[in-house]
Image (cartoon, rainbow, N blue to C red; front, top):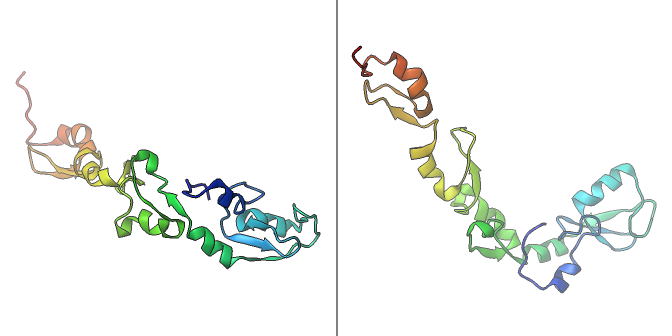
Length: 169
């Protein structure tokens, strides 16, 4: 995991993967030498039947270490959006709930506009973007009450709008 942990470096040192050098994600404990790896780092070695990178055992086997996984998920972290202003701090295991837009979500979480305009905005500004700024928002023509996308009005609708004011020659 590449998060800002709120624990001492000494605690994290024992929980780092020797391959990616980050805090273990799905800790995989080898039976040959008792080393922990991220499962996603070690799995390609298993597929290639490569030796253990720590002890060179030719057929390394292991298990997902649930005890270490629970230990890591209990460590406190800062929200990944802390640099954007989020003050949330909590156990790593609760981060998914904090970030889940369906459960309120982190107001600083960056999300794509659901109207597919191509912009990414923070969750706290999404409603404002959809109502006032999105070029794909639905609006009503002030001349004929036609409803269409805001961005299409000047180029696609107004030239054919029967109520659009035409200047005298």
